[in-house]
Figure 1 (cartoon, rainbow, N blue to C red):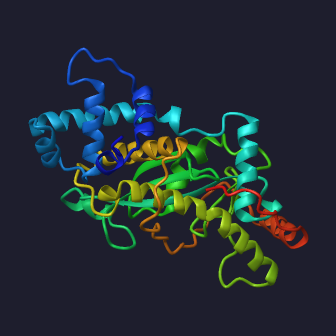
Figure 2: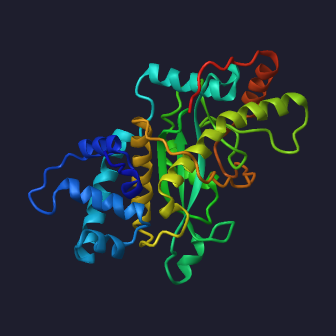
Figure 3: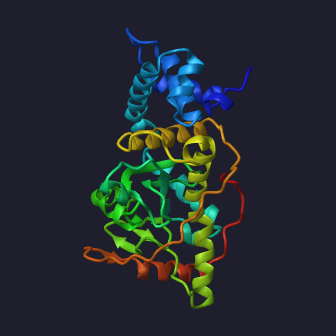
Amino acid sequence: MEDTRPDFRLSREALRVLLDLLRSDRRHGWGSTIETLIFLFWLACGTSYRVVSRAFDMPRSTVHRIVHRVAEEVVAIRHQVIHLPNTPEDLEAVCRGFAGLARHRAFLKAAGAIDGCHVRIKPPSGPDGQCYRNRKLFPSIILQAVCDHQGHFIDTYVGWPGSVHDARVLRHSPLFRRSVYPPPGHFILADGGYPCLQHPLPLITPYKRPVRGVGAQRFNLHHSRACSIIERAFGMMKTRFRSIFLKALEVHHTFVPHVITACAILHNICLGVGDIMALEDEHEEDDAEDEGEHGLETVSGAPWRDQLSAEVSALEEVPIDHDYL
Protein backbone atom coordinates (compact mmCIF):
# COMPACT_ATOMS: atom_id res chain seq x y z
CA MET A 1 0.00 0.00 0.00
CA GLU A 2 1.33 3.40 -0.95
CA ASP A 3 2.82 5.51 1.84
CA THR A 4 0.68 8.60 2.47
CA ARG A 5 3.35 10.45 4.42
CA PRO A 6 5.22 12.11 1.52
CA ASP A 7 2.06 13.93 0.34
CA PHE A 8 0.07 14.29 3.55
CA ARG A 9 2.72 13.93 6.32
CA LEU A 10 0.53 11.38 8.15
CA SER A 11 0.55 7.59 7.93
CA ARG A 12 -2.62 5.77 6.86
CA GLU A 13 -3.30 4.79 10.48
CA ALA A 14 -2.94 8.40 11.68
CA LEU A 15 -5.22 9.52 8.85
CA ARG A 16 -7.85 6.98 9.92
CA VAL A 17 -7.72 8.22 13.53
CA LEU A 18 -8.03 11.86 12.41
CA LEU A 19 -11.02 11.11 10.17
CA ASP A 20 -12.72 9.15 12.97
CA LEU A 21 -12.23 12.10 15.34
CA LEU A 22 -13.59 14.59 12.81
CA ARG A 23 -16.39 12.25 11.67
CA SER A 24 -18.69 14.88 10.23
CA ASP A 25 -21.12 13.85 7.50
CA ARG A 26 -21.61 16.97 5.43
CA ARG A 27 -24.57 17.35 3.14
CA HIS A 28 -22.73 20.03 1.18
CA GLY A 29 -19.18 20.48 0.00
CA TRP A 30 -16.74 17.89 -1.25
CA GLY A 31 -17.09 15.37 1.58
CA SER A 32 -15.13 15.24 4.80
CA THR A 33 -12.42 12.82 3.60
CA ILE A 34 -11.40 14.75 0.49
CA GLU A 35 -11.58 18.09 2.33
CA THR A 36 -9.37 16.73 5.15
CA LEU A 37 -6.86 15.51 2.55
CA ILE A 38 -6.89 18.94 0.89
CA PHE A 39 -6.11 20.56 4.25
CA LEU A 40 -3.27 18.08 4.98
CA PHE A 41 -1.82 18.53 1.49
CA TRP A 42 -1.95 22.31 2.05
CA LEU A 43 0.06 21.85 5.28
CA ALA A 44 2.49 19.44 3.59
CA CYS A 45 3.29 21.79 0.72
CA GLY A 46 3.88 24.86 2.87
CA THR A 47 0.42 26.49 2.90
CA SER A 48 0.33 27.29 -0.81
CA TYR A 49 -3.25 27.67 -2.04
CA ARG A 50 -1.96 27.84 -5.63
CA VAL A 51 -0.17 24.46 -5.46
CA VAL A 52 -3.19 22.76 -3.88
CA SER A 53 -5.51 24.36 -6.43
CA ARG A 54 -3.48 22.81 -9.28
CA ALA A 55 -3.09 19.41 -7.61
CA PHE A 56 -6.82 19.00 -6.90
CA ASP A 57 -8.00 20.90 -9.99
CA MET A 58 -10.28 23.28 -8.12
CA PRO A 59 -10.48 27.07 -7.79
CA ARG A 60 -8.12 28.71 -5.34
CA SER A 61 -11.06 30.35 -3.55
CA THR A 62 -12.55 26.87 -2.93
CA VAL A 63 -9.24 25.63 -1.52
CA HIS A 64 -9.07 28.67 0.77
CA ARG A 65 -12.61 28.04 2.05
CA ILE A 66 -11.95 24.31 2.64
CA VAL A 67 -8.64 24.92 4.43
CA HIS A 68 -10.17 27.41 6.86
CA ARG A 69 -13.18 25.19 7.53
CA VAL A 70 -11.14 22.04 8.18
CA ALA A 71 -8.63 23.97 10.30
CA GLU A 72 -11.51 25.06 12.56
CA GLU A 73 -12.80 21.47 12.75
CA VAL A 74 -9.36 20.12 13.69
CA VAL A 75 -8.90 22.82 16.34
CA ALA A 76 -12.36 21.95 17.72
CA ILE A 77 -11.17 18.41 18.63
CA ARG A 78 -8.10 19.66 20.47
CA HIS A 79 -9.36 18.73 23.95
CA GLN A 80 -9.83 15.13 22.83
CA VAL A 81 -6.20 14.97 21.66
CA ILE A 82 -4.27 17.51 23.76
CA HIS A 83 -5.19 16.97 27.41
CA LEU A 84 -3.69 16.53 30.86
CA PRO A 85 -3.34 12.99 32.28
CA ASN A 86 -6.87 11.67 32.84
CA THR A 87 -6.33 9.26 35.72
CA PRO A 88 -3.93 8.78 38.66
CA GLU A 89 -2.48 5.83 36.72
CA ASP A 90 -1.80 8.05 33.70
CA LEU A 91 -0.12 10.64 35.93
CA GLU A 92 2.00 7.98 37.59
CA ALA A 93 3.13 6.69 34.17
CA VAL A 94 4.16 10.24 33.17
CA CYS A 95 6.11 10.73 36.43
CA ARG A 96 7.86 7.37 36.10
CA GLY A 97 8.69 8.32 32.53
CA PHE A 98 10.32 11.59 33.57
CA ALA A 99 12.34 9.82 36.27
CA GLY A 100 13.48 7.43 33.53
CA LEU A 101 14.47 10.29 31.23
CA ALA A 102 16.30 12.07 34.06
CA ARG A 103 17.79 8.74 35.19
CA HIS A 104 17.10 9.63 38.78
CA ARG A 105 14.38 8.95 41.36
CA ALA A 106 14.46 12.54 42.56
CA PHE A 107 12.37 13.37 39.45
CA LEU A 108 9.50 10.98 40.27
CA LYS A 109 7.22 13.97 40.85
CA ALA A 110 7.95 15.64 37.50
CA ALA A 111 4.62 15.82 35.65
CA GLY A 112 5.61 17.63 32.45
CA ALA A 113 8.15 19.81 30.65
CA ILE A 114 7.36 23.31 29.37
CA ASP A 115 8.93 25.64 26.81
CA GLY A 116 8.10 28.19 24.14
CA CYS A 117 8.58 27.75 20.40
CA HIS A 118 8.80 30.62 17.90
CA VAL A 119 6.97 30.04 14.61
CA ARG A 120 8.07 32.28 11.76
CA ILE A 121 5.28 34.38 10.23
CA LYS A 122 4.70 37.03 7.63
CA PRO A 123 4.07 39.99 9.96
CA PRO A 124 1.20 42.45 9.54
CA SER A 125 2.15 45.68 7.82
CA GLY A 126 2.41 48.94 9.72
CA PRO A 127 3.76 49.65 13.21
CA ASP A 128 2.03 46.59 14.72
CA GLY A 129 4.35 44.35 12.72
CA GLN A 130 7.34 45.36 14.84
CA CYS A 131 5.99 43.70 18.00
CA TYR A 132 6.21 40.33 16.26
CA ARG A 133 10.01 40.59 15.97
CA ASN A 134 11.69 38.33 18.52
CA ARG A 135 15.17 38.46 20.05
CA LYS A 136 16.60 36.80 16.95
CA LEU A 137 15.03 39.60 14.87
CA PHE A 138 12.62 37.51 12.81
CA PRO A 139 8.83 37.93 13.12
CA SER A 140 7.12 35.11 14.97
CA ILE A 141 4.16 33.91 17.02
CA ILE A 142 4.82 31.93 20.20
CA LEU A 143 3.59 28.44 20.94
CA GLN A 144 3.86 27.58 24.65
CA ALA A 145 3.53 23.85 25.24
CA VAL A 146 3.80 21.30 28.02
CA CYS A 147 4.60 17.71 27.02
CA ASP A 148 4.72 14.36 28.75
CA HIS A 149 7.68 11.96 28.92
CA GLN A 150 7.01 10.68 25.39
CA GLY A 151 6.68 14.06 23.70
CA HIS A 152 2.87 14.20 23.57
CA PHE A 153 1.62 17.73 24.10
CA ILE A 154 -0.63 17.85 27.19
CA ASP A 155 -1.21 21.63 27.16
CA THR A 156 -0.78 24.28 24.46
CA TYR A 157 -1.23 28.06 24.45
CA VAL A 158 -0.56 29.97 21.27
CA GLY A 159 -0.90 33.48 19.88
CA TRP A 160 1.45 35.92 21.62
CA PRO A 161 3.77 37.95 19.35
CA GLY A 162 7.45 37.01 19.25
CA SER A 163 8.73 40.06 21.16
CA VAL A 164 7.07 38.83 24.38
CA HIS A 165 9.24 36.90 26.86
CA ASP A 166 8.36 33.24 27.57
CA ALA A 167 7.79 34.02 31.26
CA ARG A 168 5.24 36.73 30.42
CA VAL A 169 3.38 34.36 28.08
CA LEU A 170 3.32 31.85 30.94
CA ARG A 171 1.86 34.38 33.40
CA HIS A 172 -1.10 35.01 31.08
CA SER A 173 -1.73 31.36 30.23
CA PRO A 174 -4.67 29.36 31.62
CA LEU A 175 -2.13 26.84 32.96
CA PHE A 176 -0.70 29.52 35.28
CA ARG A 177 -3.91 31.39 36.10
CA ARG A 178 -6.11 28.39 36.85
CA SER A 179 -3.50 26.33 38.73
CA VAL A 180 -5.28 23.04 37.98
CA TYR A 181 -2.11 21.16 37.03
CA PRO A 182 0.13 19.64 38.21
CA PRO A 183 -1.41 18.08 41.36
CA PRO A 184 0.00 19.04 44.80
CA GLY A 185 3.49 17.69 45.39
CA HIS A 186 4.28 17.54 41.66
CA PHE A 187 6.13 19.99 39.44
CA ILE A 188 6.79 20.91 35.81
CA LEU A 189 10.32 21.14 34.43
CA ALA A 190 11.38 24.36 32.70
CA ASP A 191 14.57 25.96 31.41
CA GLY A 192 16.29 29.03 32.84
CA GLY A 193 14.07 31.40 30.87
CA TYR A 194 11.35 30.75 33.42
CA PRO A 195 11.24 31.64 37.12
CA CYS A 196 11.73 28.81 39.63
CA LEU A 197 8.36 28.67 41.40
CA GLN A 198 6.46 26.70 43.99
CA HIS A 199 3.20 28.67 43.71
CA PRO A 200 0.90 29.31 41.85
CA LEU A 201 2.47 27.00 39.26
CA PRO A 202 5.24 24.68 40.50
CA LEU A 203 8.12 25.09 38.05
CA ILE A 204 11.56 23.64 38.69
CA THR A 205 14.34 25.22 36.64
CA PRO A 206 18.08 24.47 36.56
CA TYR A 207 20.57 26.38 38.71
CA LYS A 208 21.73 29.52 36.97
CA ARG A 209 25.18 29.74 35.45
CA PRO A 210 27.89 29.84 36.60
CA VAL A 211 26.85 26.76 38.58
CA ARG A 212 28.59 26.46 41.93
CA GLY A 213 29.15 23.07 43.52
CA VAL A 214 29.14 19.48 42.27
CA GLY A 215 25.63 18.87 43.65
CA ALA A 216 24.10 21.68 41.60
CA GLN A 217 25.99 20.52 38.50
CA ARG A 218 24.67 16.98 38.93
CA PHE A 219 21.14 18.28 39.44
CA ASN A 220 21.36 20.36 36.25
CA LEU A 221 22.57 17.33 34.28
CA HIS A 222 19.64 15.15 35.35
CA HIS A 223 17.22 18.08 34.91
CA SER A 224 18.47 18.64 31.36
CA ARG A 225 18.06 14.96 30.45
CA ALA A 226 14.39 15.10 31.39
CA CYS A 227 13.53 18.65 30.29
CA SER A 228 14.98 18.18 26.79
CA ILE A 229 11.94 16.09 25.79
CA ILE A 230 9.98 19.29 25.07
CA GLU A 231 12.69 20.39 22.63
CA ARG A 232 12.46 16.99 20.95
CA ALA A 233 8.66 17.26 20.77
CA PHE A 234 8.96 20.62 18.99
CA GLY A 235 11.66 19.10 16.77
CA MET A 236 9.44 16.16 15.77
CA MET A 237 6.55 18.48 14.92
CA LYS A 238 8.83 20.77 12.90
CA THR A 239 10.31 17.82 11.00
CA ARG A 240 6.86 16.47 10.11
CA PHE A 241 5.63 19.86 8.91
CA ARG A 242 8.98 21.22 7.79
CA SER A 243 7.44 23.13 4.87
CA ILE A 244 5.61 25.24 7.46
CA PHE A 245 8.08 25.54 10.31
CA LEU A 246 11.31 26.04 8.38
CA LYS A 247 10.12 29.18 6.61
CA ALA A 248 7.70 32.03 7.29
CA LEU A 249 4.04 31.02 7.41
CA GLU A 250 2.39 32.72 4.44
CA VAL A 251 -1.06 33.16 5.99
CA HIS A 252 -2.77 36.05 7.75
CA HIS A 253 -1.32 36.42 11.24
CA THR A 254 -4.76 35.94 12.84
CA PHE A 255 -5.03 32.47 11.22
CA VAL A 256 -1.56 31.37 12.39
CA PRO A 257 -2.71 30.13 15.85
CA HIS A 258 -5.22 27.80 14.14
CA VAL A 259 -2.50 26.35 11.92
CA ILE A 260 -0.04 25.86 14.80
CA THR A 261 -2.70 24.27 17.04
CA ALA A 262 -3.73 21.94 14.20
CA CYS A 263 -0.09 20.83 13.77
CA ALA A 264 0.20 20.13 17.52
CA ILE A 265 -2.99 18.03 17.37
CA LEU A 266 -1.72 16.08 14.36
CA HIS A 267 1.63 15.56 16.13
CA ASN A 268 -0.18 13.91 19.06
CA ILE A 269 -2.32 11.74 16.80
CA CYS A 270 0.78 10.52 14.96
CA LEU A 271 2.67 9.71 18.18
CA GLY A 272 -0.39 7.86 19.45
CA VAL A 273 -0.29 5.40 16.52
CA GLY A 274 3.49 5.08 16.47
CA ASP A 275 3.92 7.28 13.39
CA ILE A 276 7.22 8.82 14.48
CA MET A 277 9.53 10.69 12.12
CA ALA A 278 13.25 10.72 12.70
CA LEU A 279 14.43 14.22 13.55
CA GLU A 280 15.97 15.97 10.57
CA ASP A 281 16.58 19.25 12.34
CA GLU A 282 16.98 19.46 16.07
CA HIS A 283 14.84 22.21 17.54
CA GLU A 284 16.95 25.33 17.79
CA GLU A 285 17.24 25.89 21.50
CA ASP A 286 16.87 29.44 22.68
CA ASP A 287 19.52 30.95 24.88
CA ALA A 288 17.49 31.09 28.07
CA GLU A 289 17.09 34.58 29.44
CA ASP A 290 16.80 34.96 33.17
CA GLU A 291 13.41 36.26 34.17
CA GLY A 292 12.56 37.56 37.61
CA GLU A 293 9.14 37.44 39.19
CA HIS A 294 8.51 41.18 38.98
CA GLY A 295 5.11 42.14 40.28
CA LEU A 296 4.08 38.52 40.79
CA GLU A 297 2.33 37.09 43.81
CA THR A 298 4.49 33.99 43.77
CA VAL A 299 6.36 31.67 46.09
CA SER A 300 9.88 30.80 44.98
CA GLY A 301 10.66 27.19 44.16
CA ALA A 302 14.34 27.56 45.08
CA PRO A 303 14.04 25.71 48.45
CA TRP A 304 12.23 22.84 46.67
CA ARG A 305 14.97 22.74 44.04
CA ASP A 306 17.60 22.61 46.79
CA GLN A 307 15.76 19.68 48.34
CA LEU A 308 15.65 17.86 44.97
CA SER A 309 19.33 18.61 44.47
CA ALA A 310 20.10 17.06 47.86
CA GLU A 311 18.12 13.97 46.83
CA VAL A 312 20.13 13.76 43.60
CA SER A 313 23.33 13.74 45.65
CA ALA A 314 22.00 11.25 48.22
CA LEU A 315 20.01 8.79 46.12
CA GLU A 316 21.11 6.35 43.45
CA GLU A 317 20.23 6.84 39.81
CA VAL A 318 17.26 5.06 38.22
CA PRO A 319 18.32 1.96 36.30
CA ILE A 320 17.56 2.31 32.60
CA ASP A 321 14.85 -0.29 32.04
CA HIS A 322 12.76 1.45 29.41
CA ASP A 323 13.33 3.57 26.33
CA TYR A 324 10.75 6.32 26.60
CA LEU A 325 11.07 7.57 23.04
